[in-house]
Length: 335
Image: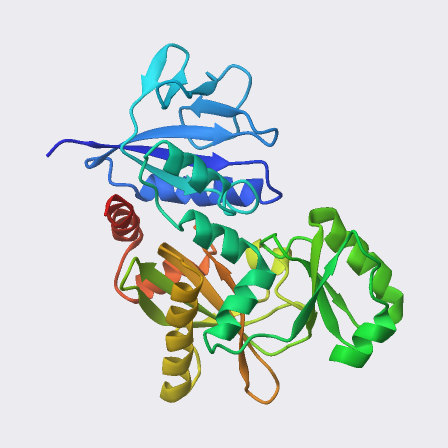
């Protein structure tokens, strides 16, 4: 059997650059080197593509990777890079929003993860909520503020959603730019922070119960894992609570839920996955309020593969180890 030439892309221009590097290290280690000949390309924070020898930050001495639109191939110097399939381990803008997927589509290169549409939709929390709601999945009540218009006042938001709300960029991940607002004194700083990350700002009613995450795998007939229950270690599951090894967050696999609730969440996860045109993989996140009502929070179409990431942990609990998971994802891309 001939080797498959795999292009592993990581880094990127987004605020989740470092998360991407951490994920890519784990993915690279898990790839079966007997089946795949791996080419590593690091994208710098400035958007430069560089050929590297291991998963790390690129520097000026690394060969620049250039796309020749005349023949549709990547080159490092005079050497053409042979690519049978690409694995974008990219989080956030310019990686998880449909841009890199569109480029790979133009080049006729199969790739792991969401379609152009699926990536663009799931990167936009407002569009995700609209499609999931129309598919019959309950979502957290929200509204959108476009930063080119006048911002709503805290009083206006308080009248609509109550005194505690979350303010977040519509198109960002890893809780970047997210704030929990409990009073009028916190309002301006919260909307200013979110506006630094996006021109669309999501304002949501606070749902402060435990989080529940489901890993989904597949194309036309996706399947879902059991559920991971997260008891947050901070006021909300922010960047530090997610990625700090000393985080006080607690994880329970399987979740401490009734069988009926478990099956309902898994069904909603699959329904949301299909409604948003996901493909290959996604982590679908839910929240519970004090009364036990479950709401879809968001869909992560390129979930983390760091040492603390839930997506590979859930598949491991289902009997699919890290290396097999990566091989399955590549096979789904080649379909």
